[in-house]
Image (cartoon, rainbow, N blue to C red):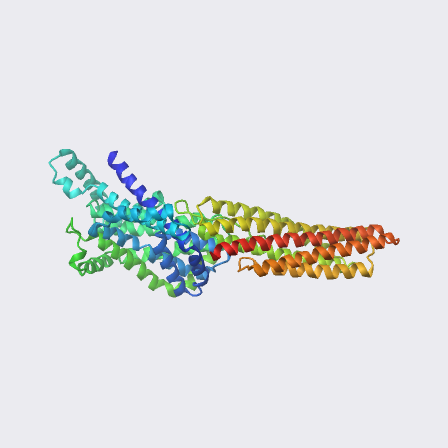
Length: 573
């Protein structure tokens, strides 16, 4: 039991280090990583490089593929682009095996605590990026320390067999018997250990952690090279489950991206099973070509580096074989996961993340896209209102029903965006992204208020027609001029969402709001004058109500620009 807890504790240090490292990198380079993910994926080869780079930094292919699924769910990546990134993620995750092998040879674990020592001052005295750099260093140190602890916690079977302690000998023989019983079935044993790899990855929910366990146990003589290689193949399948489960909350494209990951890895494992023994012989030969300096100090077996070679060569070969079939893979998953919802249904914003490494930092583009969509809805709804207002003699009941549905959907969008951003903020965010989340919450609320105002204008227009209120040419001209200012302000807001917002832009927004306020006062004053001259009091009161709502939209628009400026300023620092 003590041995089990030592191994589990060592694994916990490794996983916690990976979590701190991953989240620190997201805070340090999150903006760049988002830009790379969203723009450098336009062909499969660029996507391959993007996936390789992202996974090498995050040290988690599961985190990368969950990010991919999230971006596909938001429409920031196409299915075709996502497959290239997934391929690169598979290659990027092989870095873990090389790190573990290096720990066995070069005792990187000895510098783990000094790395934590270097990072600690940054954590306490640093600000923003320097503080996040400290988190990265501490994460690296804990990751290396965890690997060193794991290596020390797992007893060496060969040493146990030579021990004078009969308990150690009995335990070593027990381990050997278990492995021999599983290994004595020829090709069936490969399948058994492959299943072990799948199960191990499902349990620890991290292919990197599963790889660390596999390589460490192999280095300490618990399992041989072929058994370890079969487990690694199983881990390649097991790691797809994380993205698969995450995609269940997403839309049809998110589910297709997760299935593409699964299909790519399964196809790779299937062809590898056919050539398994020949491939492992090639790997052993390549291992023998390594310089003597790569030989472990505590063992004559180069199994750790052989496993690193196997993992890298397998994933690289799989990419070479399948990268030309990306369109076929895309078509296969489109046929596999059919779109049964139709396109008229509102796309729901759903938070997609991974249990161990939270990707809140890299999830913000999806929220930004949803807020932009809500912003475009304000323009569409206001244009729809003016269409209804300008056609009193036409049956616009269908248009009115559409606008009512859009207003109801805007309520749902606000709820989804708010829930999503709260989940993003549950992870520790960088200072600029914390400001961005606060700003987006305010912007989304203001946009939804504009949708509400617009629908109230539609209902006023309905009342105008039902009560047969006739507007004078002066009233109609005033509404035409005022509404054009509203449209200009809404267009200005949508143009500036999540782009650079300068003080000049804020001044322009204030000028637009002041102009609209002056316009409201003048038009309402004119209405009062007409009422005093025996004008249509009911029509004039309705006109005043419409003017007040126009000006209210201007107030909300000004609030949006101010919030957008706070986001822009935080990201510019």
